[in-house]
Length: 320
Image (cartoon, rainbow, N blue to C red):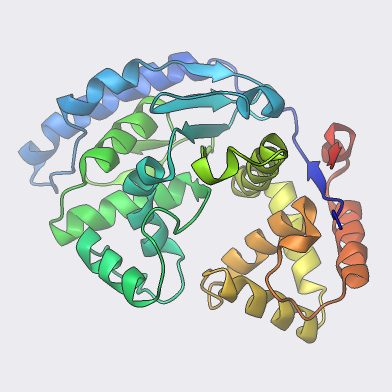
């Protein structure tokens, strides 16, 4: 039996005029702030090193989700959506490359079973993953982070006296260049206008599957919803109101299912964000959830009705 998978992609049109020019001017100011920080006795913040600078020659391409999933990056490609340019999208050529750049960030912010108070060293994370029967490369198949969480990660690295690895150094310079965060000489802060970072990756395990592109599009649509949650206050409020209206048993069902997918169930905002993204993307994605498919579909319909009207005309339905 082949199950039918419905993927609903919700985008929205938002004007971010002059984004490229602003990113370039912010990059110059951040570099100047970094060079002057020590003169005022402030913390010396990590900077991306020249070994990664040639990668920053990658231009950001404006493409639709359907175009993005057909890309074949040598290392990675950078995208923004015409309908939601505030979301910066990284498409990696392999899960390993994605993991090297983003896994420590994920563990610090949200992965279940780890402390979220300190940034752990890579070898410590790998040791714990092996102990739990998991692989470094597949901690997550996609990632999503708010600008404020990105700033918090690099501030925490600095406060612990830890250096970013080579991939994290590149990430730092990239998000400074693209205007997601800024450096005031003492710490990193989320910049205006508010943006977010999401990522997807090529996966060799999918290449032989006839529905490879549909799986990739599902993953991208899921991550885009996280990007909307991070950057659009009305979207986030609708998702929060939906969550707050759930029965205790329904919230418990979602928490337990997401915990099995290695999301920390103690993080309330994470539970809201993941519930909306999974529920709107594919109701079959919840792991061993105690809710029936009929109840999940009804909850999906309820959430769609609570979202701001401007999201609905841009819905894209894909079935296989």
